[in-house]
Length: 142
Image (tube, rainbow, N blue to C red; front, top):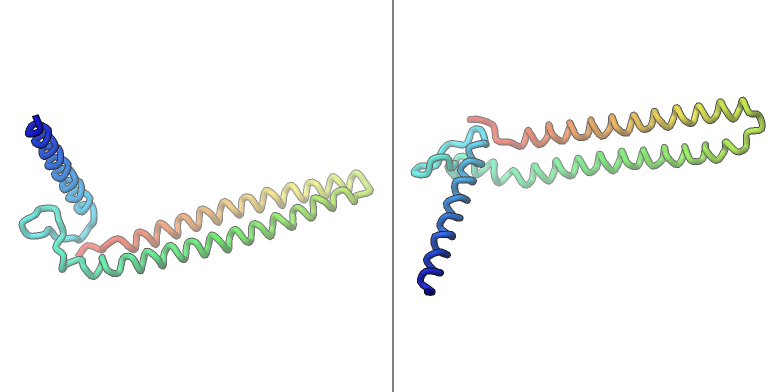
């Protein structure tokens, strides 16, 4: 009885290992410029890409650091602009004339939407810069 259980477990483990190896081969084949490892088709040769692999964590850390720094700066700008908008919103109550109130309200509304547009554009630029930086990290074909 236990022999059947152990045999089933062994077969399941072997199948799992084969599946993982095949997934790794397919993943490694997606990296351009990696030569095949002798004896194992689809796996890269260690000497050919060892330098790139060693430099990758440093480059990745630099890219993430730059992205976080840009996000922090953008958020700080948005926060400061938001505080200014809140101050201007409280100043609306000080208006004595209906026309002045209307003009200040329109100005506040337009400024708020301009700030939102700038925030979305900054996010799109940061995302595009991050994608470009990460694309540079991919190994180049040799």
